[in-house]
Image 1 (cartoon, rainbow, N blue to C red):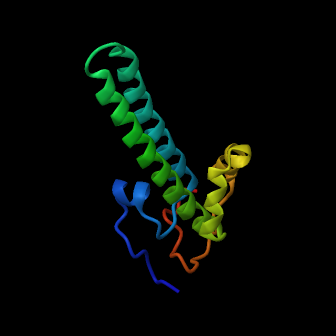
Image 2 (image 1 turned 30 degrees about the horizontal axis):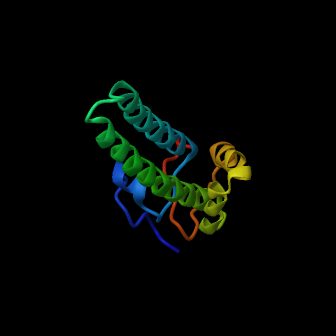
Amino acid sequence: MNSGPDHTPTVQWVLFGFRGRIGRKSYLLAALFMILVQAVVLTQIIATEGTSTSALWGLAMLVVLLLSAWASLAMAVKRLHDIGLPGPLAICLLIPAISLFAFLFLAVMPPSKETNQHGPPPFPRDD
């Protein structure tokens, strides 16, 4: 068992790391951040439609979507760790028929209050 987290809690770790735990609030805030980034890029695609920069924004959207998919899996794994469930269940987010239910499950399930193999609870008030 770990006596503490083996990571520094940074935005990079929250979005792209697969170790440790995150609480419900951190999970929802990170998901909101990803949605906002996607919305900004989509707005630029619409605003530049028919111009020479439209293709660049399309490429930017592809990159953002790939990074968002990775971040969604990383956050889901850490959220599952916080609940006390195995990380590989995050694959449920990739199944369209159940992805919304999986997201809502991760967003509302209370954390495990005890330290587990993935470390202590992330923040005492971030559940």
